[in-house]
Length: 238
Ligand code: FPP
Image (tube, rainbow, N blue to C red; front, side, top):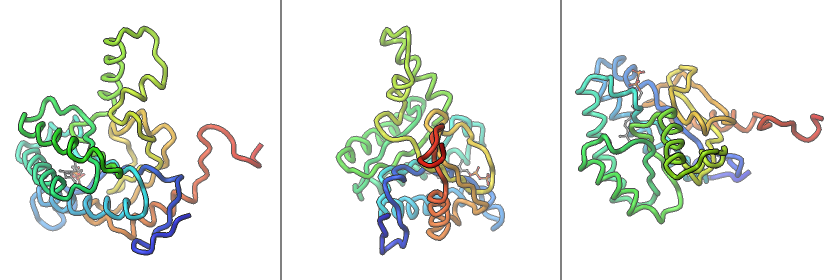
């Protein structure tokens, strides 16, 4: 295990990829009599802080669920506030340019200017080695269907698991080892459906804007107490 002095969290290469379902921003705001948009704003602060700690610990891939294909059914002002947050986040990320950003999801339905900003951020950060995936207008089922259609269009009439894996938005990166969901719900909400086949889950009641280093440490400690078998048996269990 590699102990990182600054974060006081130990990891090793069993934890390469951590993903977050950042739930509870609305409840966080409601408890403070604030608009839901304020919850999302504080949610972005949490995201920036937690991603930085994960990378400091040595985790190579961080994925966050920022906007799902189902989130379009929310009130327009809430959607607009999330899109505004994305715009200002991209501007900061571009200036900082220490991480590699990859957007998971269908950009094509977004405003063209926003698409350009997203593509530009992916392009200018492509040589950085720590990867932050932002799932935006993302749906796990749509991602799998999209991969299948790409394969059909390429002329395939028989496909393998590897074919699908290599045509997802997450192609060429490891599946998430650990998926953390805040705000206490025990569901996957159409997130990384293919990739989560053998992921470990950590659910906490903490709302996303309150998720901090201490809670991240608890999630990681819990991950290292699990015995991962990937459907098989470990040595000594035969
Ligand atoms: C779930 O909380 C959160 C979302 C649907 C959006 C998450 C978005 C952010 C953290 C900000 C956007 C990120 C970027 C990078 C721009 P909820 O609103 O469902 O909370 P609730 O269940 O308490 O109502």
